Length: 127
Image (cartoon, rainbow, N blue to C red; front, top):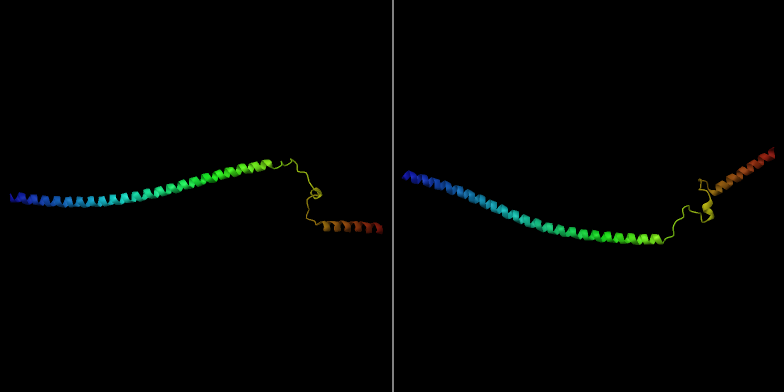
């Protein structure tokens, strides 16, 4: 009977140790769960803040888009009021009739033409 009591005592001791380990594991899991719930609450708060920021940005984008559309409508109205451009632009002044500048200054061109005229005049006198 003494052996049975000793055996029961040892088994009870092992059960107490197992129970303590399970209790410690339970406490660790409970702390981890509490930490995860706190993290979840913080994440939910951050998510709400990000959603508010997103909604504000969407509202700002929509407002800017509406302003752009309004500006485009006003610009088109202004452009419609402007006179239409002619198919082939006609020069409005005498300078537009001149050929594009070939890189020669007008004074240089006149003096070159005058020198050529004098040279041909002198050759006519020699002959």
